[in-house]
Image 1 (tube, helix red, strand yellow):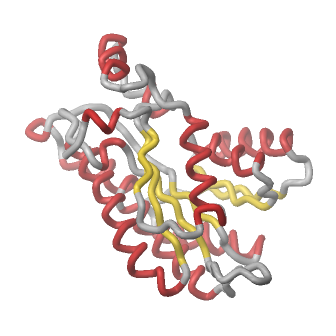
Image 2 (image 1 turned 45 degrees about the vertical axis):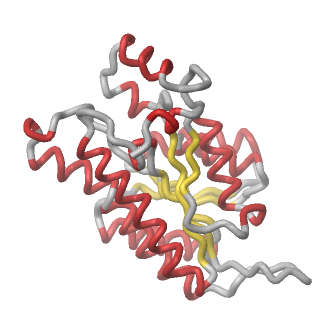
Length: 251
């Protein structure tokens, strides 16, 4: 999904991008696709473990050194690891998942916001909608639901939604917007590696009023829109991009 978000930014005119992943091969492939879309686009590749404070500091520093500032940040890294009941879950399983899904978002926000606060607000002539930066965090349908056998994943994504809302309120006076997108079930590598059965996938589709899974491009378009000036009055919202699946999972 991160690749789709990147390409959607490029399609909407973004020409300076810091690409971040834990896999250098994934980064190189995404960079190739960016060049195919726009040969003038400039990319900087940064291998990063978002659960590492030093890695995230290096990530932000690399962006500022290369491009001078951070206008948009999309924190999308996540782990699924499959379904495990709480009583059968190991501490290592819980820690591994939450270190990426929850701590990773905290670290990214911490250093992104610290940089954005230093920046001169962007504003066009005659426009009073000043902004120093926009952050969009990827949560999940599980960030507002209680899905069986996913207690750790649900907990980590609830944390992302709440942290984003708190930081949206905290940093609005500094002209920084913070929002979340909550995808439904999207056939990403994380989903396919979870080992979900065809029967289970059919049951998920049946719970969507649209009768289908969410497309990665639909999530990407929401992220780009929330990042843009077209959403200048929005902060602290959780945009559910899930083909209506959240209507069946309200807690």
